[in-house]
Image (cartoon, rainbow, N blue to C red; front, side):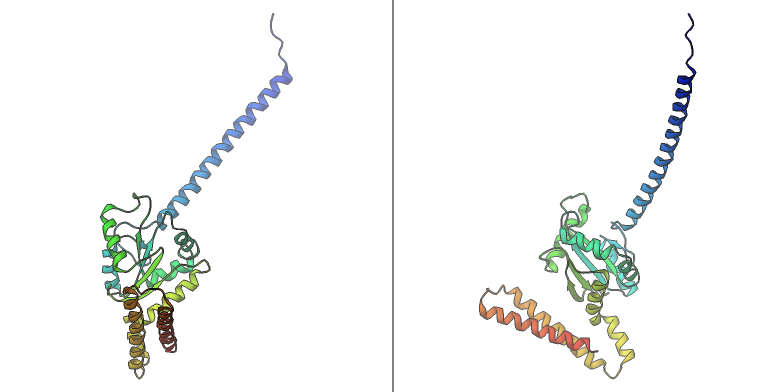
Length: 252
């Protein structure tokens, strides 16, 4: 016997096949779109990655030597970022709240050389040739915790300041801290001498007083003084002298 054709079922099957084909087409479209979006994300991520070789203004690099060379050439200050990129909570907060922001990136692109000195748990992040160098620089700059931000003048020798992390810090507030540190830079001296030739000697004297007060504190800390009431008073006096010098400098 011939099997009778149930046209209603044939129609339902035909409809189901059409719907299935449409779903497959839509799935392909969605998949392609997702791939394009992922490509964009990867591309943007690549732009944000720390360079391993060479140095460009406003871009993070692990190449300390190249950054110092470019700093001298461009006469731009250097920001050293001592970090633990894959484990340090405060480092990640600063990356999110400060360094990922457009305001910071636009400022850095015109004003700073940026160096990442990383101490990660994942040893594959930092090339082997930089590991011992990072350790040496950490000791040289007296780094005791992460993150630590050291500001150098464009000569790569003169230390202008040291900044730290903070949950409340923003790109704007961090830039303000940098500008304050950069007041003692060679470029600031040159600019002030041109704008205020009659006050340049007083400006230099104020800068020197600030440097002397900071050095006095650093030298005292190097002696590893014991914690007692007398030394607590000394420490408070050192801080007061530095604050007074900073206030004097802010008036110029």
